[in-house]
Length: 167
Image (tube, rainbow, N blue to C red; front, top):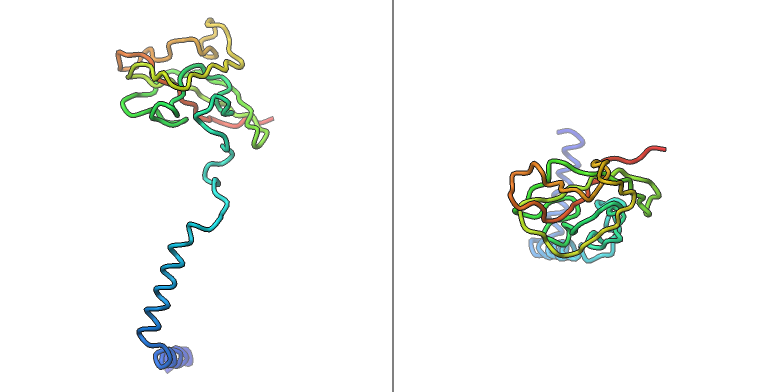
């Protein structure tokens, strides 16, 4: 028998001689209760959200610098996902927005969600950097649901960060 095997056998026999089933169950219960209380401890949350510390249902949210429409975050979707029963328009417009949390500019794509009547909640018209309609790719006053499968054109607008602007 190797020294390692002898050591493990010795430790196992000592543990079996000193700890009974009841003490094992008591210790296990303490561990389970402690593990159940672990989510209650104060920890730094929001790491998964990155630098998005603002409310996506507010027109002041940094991603909405060039938005013009009803916010999908108030209409059953999120700031990046269309609500159920709608589909993203095949065409979008873009804006460059400053994230105050990290001081960097981001290219944001604004996608109208089509397929239901207008949401009617959280109207936001910031229009920063909006251009006249003859520059359709930079204008938010255009029916972006053109070409979508649905007959009802516009429900809400979502915003997706495409990339960071490198200086």
